Picture (cartoon, rainbow, N blue to C red):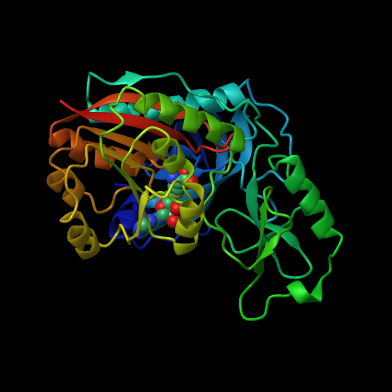
Length: 391
Ligand SMILES: C[S@@+](CC[C@H](N)C(=O)[O-])C[C@H]1O[C@@H](n2cnc3c(N)ncnc32)[C@H](O)[C@@H]1O
């Protein structure tokens, strides 16, 4: 066995001063990096590469058992590569790593997202699943209705991927026009001593194109980041629930500020909406009719969920849109909602969604419909809207 491999097995290898190597990309990671095999068998993650490309790679570190690499020279480039429509794009600590797939045309990005979904579905092995085509974004730039900037008083921008380095950003082509204008006007205030960070490295400035101005150091309740695609998601949901009798009691988890609750309340007589963020719940209560019951609950706490669910009877439809962690506490919902007929699961994380679907499938559900939707062009992010029904 080669020396590096033996050392990696012991978990004590230092990648510093290691020789560069040439490798081909055999896969893409969920965060968009190329997966490359070292000639000695180790796996490396390398940003800025596409499937089947070949590059000379510098070894720069490790992440658990996986090596981290940087492209020195692209030896075989994908013929579809394009000129990147952003001056800040790149993978060094001086570049913004926010749009890792910007070097590929939009159609190729969509095809890669679909491939990943297809392989996840294969691992679930439900032959009854209907996979819809990708609901592509109408605008591949200028879509981002919110963003979080960071400032130390002299720079204003984003943090480079995998670093604590603040990158000064003069313009950002994925921002909506109104957010872009806010960025431009904020930059006119630089340098700004009042934005200088005191204890922490930087202050945060949140942009949201529904707000009158930027929000300094104040976390806003969750909002879907692409307004046009959010309309498509709400339409998809309205269509998915249309065949269900309006008197079926519905439970919505991770309801946020009521984006989907509004759609549910327009069809169902009884909706129970659960959310952990108090400020989101306040917005939700203002948006939906009084008959919608709202509950503040930490859905990642098993004792809290168990106590709460024991008082719920007769729920027939479950709708959920969790954060990346997925339905971490799921057994009480799967086991105790005995009258549950349908689950509508919206996910931003394929891995945790697949984990949760597996548990539903084992309890007699089928994954009947899966619709992929692109919320964030230029990134590997994929939103999936899915329906599980009790067989
Ligand atoms: C992906 S967002 C979905 C929001 C909503 N469906 C929408 O479309 O705007 C996930 C929501 O889960 C909430 N959340 C995150 N962790 C939670 C927890 N442990 N318990 C309850 N809610 C939580 C967040 O506050 C956020 O509103």
